Image 1 (spheres, rainbow, N blue to C red):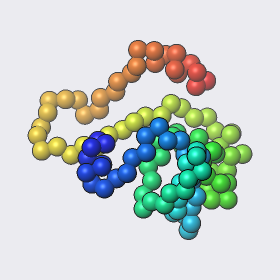
Image 2: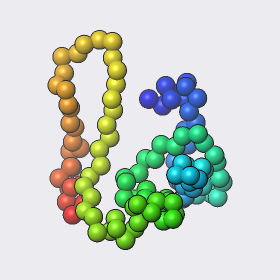
Image 3: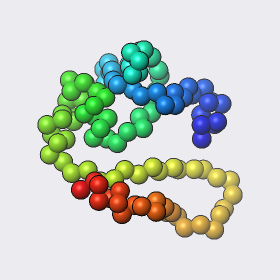
Image 4: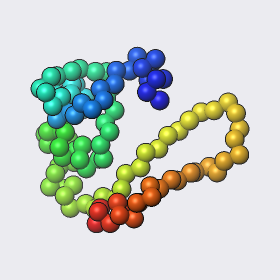
Length: 112
């Protein structure tokens, strides 16, 4: 997926933590990297779970609908990574495929 994204103009920053995402008119304006560098993009994909992104990456004034005090009251479950792929070949596979890590039970226990 990374190769396809880059081929289509995406810029990937791997192992580059983001400390803040700023918005303007409810649209992401720029990201702030851990080293303080600010970068503006047309689109941003966040690799964080919803609760973490809303409470740690955005200023509360920018995401009033998802205030930390409200999100702290909610229970979150584990996240999923979903891929929707358009293929030109028919494969004999189940519609949904779910894969678990060998230690998935330990990981689920850590959520509670």
